[in-house]
Amino acid sequence: MDQSIKVLQELLRLALWGDEPRDLKDLELSPRQWTLTMNASLKQGVQGLVLDSLERVGETHPPRISLDQFRAMADAQKLVYRQHLKLTDYLRVRFENSDRPFTPIVLKGLSLARLYEKPWLRNLGDIDLYFASPEREKWATDCVESWGTPVGRGKCSESSYVMGGVVVEHHGLLVHPHTIIRSQSRKLQEWIENEMKSPDSTRSISLEGVEIRVLRPDLDLLQLLSHALKHCINEGIGLRQLCDIAVFLHANKDIIDGGKTFETLRIFGLESWARLVFAFLIQWLGLPEGDLPYKVENVKKQNIAALSDEVAKSGDLGFMDERVSKRPRGWKGKAFTARRIFTKAWRFLPYAPREIIAWLPTL
Amino acid sequence: MKKIKEFIKRDIAGETVLVPTGATAQEYNGMMTLEGIGGFVWDHIEEADSLDALVALITNEYEVDAETARKDARRFIQQLIDAGMVVPETPEW
Image: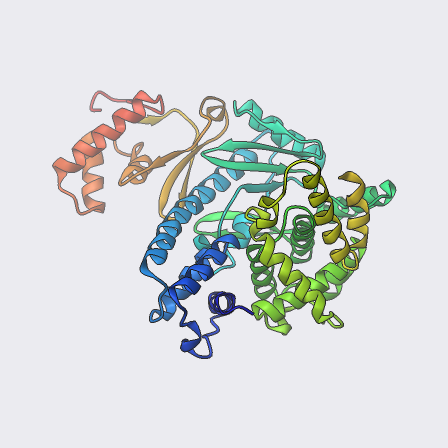
């Protein structure tokens, strides 16, 4: 592993688990190497965690200019974090005081940020609210429109709008099971809707005075892994998404039901993908094995290496994937895209066969 | 002073925010962030029967001189009146 990436790994482990680097000399890099480390952290969407670690170790700072830039970004992230808190609370109060009182369930975003020691250092994008059924999602979207806010409606029971400078998305479906058998897809959706009728399917947590409704851990993990897989086989997956899953497992290790979680992931065809992700989290991010909901074995080293390679190249949600920018024009470009898609499909086929097979015809 | 609109006051990450509810939510699409003593004034505006009484409450709670408190409270209350959120009930206001 390149030394600049090794340092990124050490800094993330320090931020996530408080694991001090074995030797501070390991963090001694040339200015050029530091630039590579800092750029990699930006590409992976984990610059807040890296800043936190560098401020903890103190001695071996990268060139000052980089750190000042990161501090300025962290200040901006804090403003976004506060806006998320206010808007999430605002929307909850509005929906709870409507003609059909309902507390929306927060997916990702703040529900994950709260698990970090300094929640504002996790990049926040949009606010994702889940309404537990397509019918209720439609009602919630109608509500927002009645307030005078323009809303864009998607095809799969989802909608989005901008409020207070933040994109808010409504979801009627927790996951979008990709399967070529329609009846199976319908059955999976019914399974989720039935689970959501149970009073223990959600719980309430508090963050800085804001009450946030979140999913039961096994359902939350289903959503996180499904979302990560979707991004992995489409745009890309970065360390931010993987750090999220790692801190989620760490925070819920005592309350997550291992047997139930395994069964849920199996039903959705995500068990193999989960196994690969869990193995990566242990090997790359240093997640303690005991934090996993169930024991994971038989993951080939080359498959973990393949995921590491994909993560390194695609970065946070694939936004800065250099492979995409190298796409040539004309027919060569089409061949380039086809090769990229089939390489990914082949690489992840053993871990998500149902998803890959259903995904290819949609291209 | 009487509040004539329905707002829920929320304390979020050290900030005070008013969220409209009920019929008020049909008029106001958004939240209002109250700064400084705004949250305290909003909480006590109905129990004080005059500006003097409100200033006394403020100076009891905060380390601020009466003149500054009066100036800030008057400006804030005028904003609330202009926004149609409160109406004076007695001439003392």
